[in-house]
Image (cartoon, rainbow, N blue to C red; front, side, top):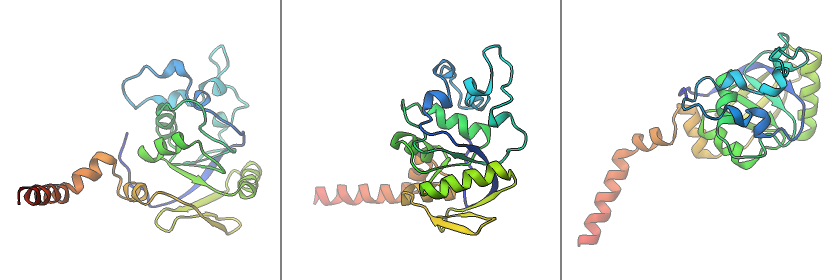
Length: 202
């Protein structure tokens, strides 16, 4: 997965106002055999994007050129179902940097944070309003300030604070995964281990 720092993002959004979207809808199980994380975006929401004959479904939002951007605005309870990490890979590989919902399945949320995708929880009423704004005006933009943990609808000025694990926040800001983070504090770990060894031998 590409390591990209996340700080402030201003973007238009892609609306997907359906509730209870599960990981099998995000990336069907038949596409999980690949060994590389790249290329999964081609099959993001595959069964919704294409008909059974392989033609693009013109009714589906990802096939509508009006809607573009790096922020996916989904309905409540996004990412439920199996724990497949591939769902996050597909969303990230397609080009999204953040997903907005009023509730995420815990495993999906953790997978997202581990792979550079920011899941943002906002209140139900604001989510519904945002979806309506985007559907009526595809040029609607939002601003995500990760450092301040503030999500803003730029056209209305409405802002909300969002929560995030402090450790995962630091990793996103610096573009690090868990291994990178541990390597970055290698000297501290070595010092701690040496000190502990010395104390045990004393």
